[in-house]
Amino acid sequence: MLPGLPKGRMFAQMNKLLTTLRYWVSYALPLSRRINSRYSGPLTVELHRGRKVLNAQHANYSYGPLQQILRYGLFIIAPDPTVPVLVLGMGGGSVIDTLRRERKHTGPITALELDPAIVELAATEFDIRPDAQLHIVCADAFAWLPTAPAAAYGLVIIDLFIDLTLPHQLSEAGFWQQLRRVLQPGGAVLLNTLVQAPLLIAGQPAPAYLTQQGFEVKDLEVEYNRLLILRGRGRIRLKAWPITRSCNAETPFFAGSTPALWKF
Image 1 (cartoon, rainbow, N blue to C red):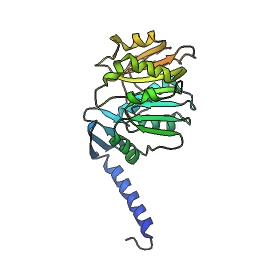
Image 2: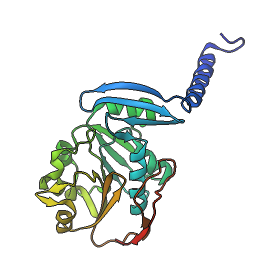
Image 3: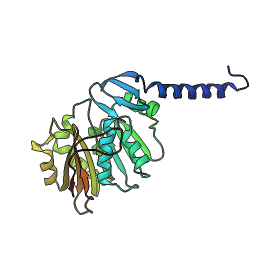
Image 4: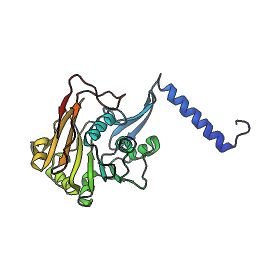
């Protein structure tokens, strides 16, 4: 025991020293913790070069490249910081971190996550816990959505992977009808999918189907991911921005060879 320090303060100092030591060791040797999940299989929390990430067996779930990709989509959408947000597929909560810390979002957020193991990791490893403006629901997003109030959300973020697999319900028209029901007029949707497995909805390519449903659709390819940014018609167009093809996880935006300006 350190002389002259109360026991509680001593443990606090020791924890602080251990945290600092782990941080610097991670630059030489990644530190990891493995958790088995009923839904997602083996999950790994890894501290690498001072950054903590959550990975599934074959994919990043939170705080790695995925955070960069969704950050880019949020930059394009530029949501009002007070708008109610619905997150379908919270993961470790990196998109919540981006909304609050970088987008300065102060409005209410409802976050759905199927996997209780991931909800626990979000709290214990990434400090994402319910509070006055964050409601976390551990439930199946597809079963919960029909129970949500109509026209309740100005932004919906959909990231419903289980490892590298998209649930089949995303291909059903009923899901999108429910989503349109809970979206405020002129609201926005950010949908994360994979380039290698184009999403079909009711047998049609997702952009074509969603355009028919009254959305303005922007289809972006970022690394191995495909972002669909949807906006209900009748609102201001999104600003032009250089869209590129590769992601640098060390920087907040993307670097590529030939930017192309576009407008919604």
